[in-house]
Length: 121
Image 1 (cartoon, rainbow, N blue to C red):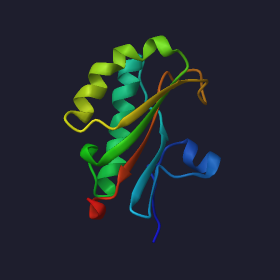
Image 2 (image 1 turned 135 degrees about the vertical axis):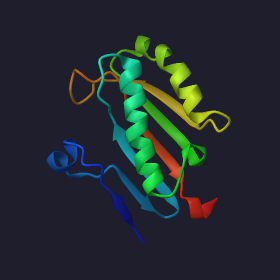
Image 3 (image 1 turned 45 degrees about the vertical axis):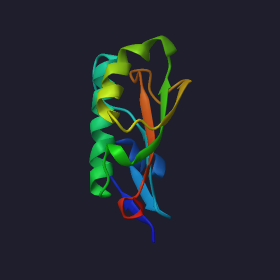
Image 4 (image 1 turned 180 degrees about the vertical axis):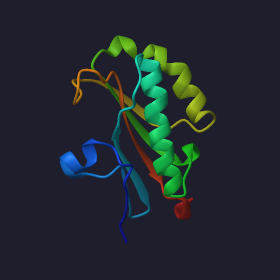
């Protein structure tokens, strides 16, 4: 069974995707950006949006097994480290950071996660 979670984000209907898909024992959360003026504010807000999708799927941060961070400027990643450490705590996932262009120049970080569905723990 496949379950789709929509967040109501502006790009979902424009592009044709949803915030997360629960399938095959996994929760796949789409690349997520958040509002804010600083990279750390955008990071926190993107994580809040991701957490809402995880919660709707019955999961939490401890269930995340993989995270990908995408930033237009790799030098802005380090200020996010404390936010990420606080978020994942004692359950750090495997992680990758990629320097790349994002959908809009106002965005400074995009975050994508994969989590184990709760009934698989």
